[in-house]
Figure 1: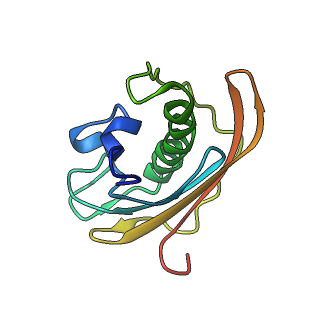
Figure 2 (figure 1 turned 90 degrees about the vertical axis):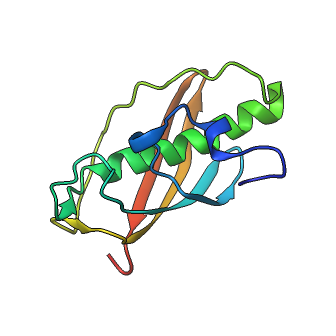
Length: 129
C-alpha cells in the first residue's frame, strides 16, 4: 500500500496472474520502486522458472504506478486511468531464467515527458544481478 487509502489495485488495472507487483517501496510523480516475488502463476513460467522477458512487464507496471499516482494526486482516486501502449527501445538481460520465490526490485524514472508520451528508464534487480 502506498498511502492509507490507495492500494496497488487502484493504480494498475492488472488482476490475477498479470498483477506482478507485490509491494510499492517508493513512489512519487516521477519515479517508483517496487518489489515482486516470482510465483508459478506468473506469465512465462515453464514449470521450473520464469523467462526474464517478464522483467519488461515489471518495468511497465512500475512505471504505471508512478504515473497513475501522479494522475490520482491531481484528479482524485476515481479519475479514469487508461492503459498504456509500451514500446521497448532497448533491453539487456543478465540472467537466462528467474527461479521461483526470487524477490525482484524494480526501479523506474520518467526521463522525458510530453503530453501523454513518456520516455521511461527502468531496471530490475535480483540480488546483485
